[in-house]
Amino acid sequence: MESTESSYVSSPEAARKRSPPPPKSPTSENAEKPTYVRFLVSNAAAGSVIGKGGSTITEFQSKSGARIQLSRGHEFFPGTSDRIIMVSGAIDDILKALNIKDNDDAEPRTKVRLIVSNSSCGSIIGKGGATIKSFIEGSQAGIKISPQDNNFYGLNDRLVTVTGTLDEQLRAIDLILSKLCEDSHYSQAMHAPFSYAATYNSMSYAPNGAGVKFPNHKEDHSNSITIGVSDEHIGLVLGRGGRNIMEISQVSGARIKISDRGDFMSGTTDRKVTITGSQRAIHQAESMILQKVANASE
Image 1 (tube, rainbow, N blue to C red):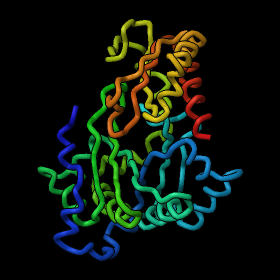
Image 2 (image 1 turned 90 degrees about the vertical axis):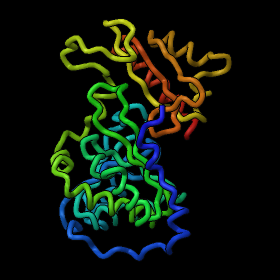
Image 3 (image 1 turned 45 degrees about the horizontal axis):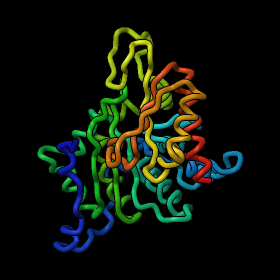
């Protein structure tokens, strides 16, 4: 279902026709203010960020002056198989770190998916979408905010996808972070536990299990999680004639359901893979699915 935010999908082409790209803005008053940004990175790319024995991440930090933290191997953003990077420091240092990271990649990055809490998304959108429209025009980047995903208990974050050239992305992130710096809720969340994604993704129920109902639960004693698998890799999970998915289901004891074509996780082109069963069965099935995808990526 399309959210109202879909109207904020940028069309920077129109802005380009009206005026040439604006020059790089002088450092804003928030440039030196300590802040942070969290964004998604694929499991494969995470390895290149860390480097052998952590050498690359140490180099990124010393060159940029920003602090870089990465979620652990199996701590993914809910509904995806992507890990989370948090870069903290002054805005200038954060932008420098993102710039170094992009130049270090073999292929140019066409989009960045930032993680922003629901409560802070309003300040980026602005009244009637005025703020986000001004960011799109000012940066020439595409900016889209995903609808809220209610499939995960306690998930209060949304994805802000920024598309365009590296320069356009950096200008958009600069504008977004400068705005978020003014939001007290955003600043406070900097000190929230960084590994929050592990809790959401490994168990979709309240810690005390006290009568919480979930859309994916058919039986009270069953737990259920939904992970995202890219459309191109879904065939590997299914296998010929559904052989792989049957094997994963039999070995783990979990029930596995894959969404129809075109039915994607919010803000992504990943198909929904819902795994239901005991906690042990879910964990085993999830590991087997991610292993199939990882083998293909390698």
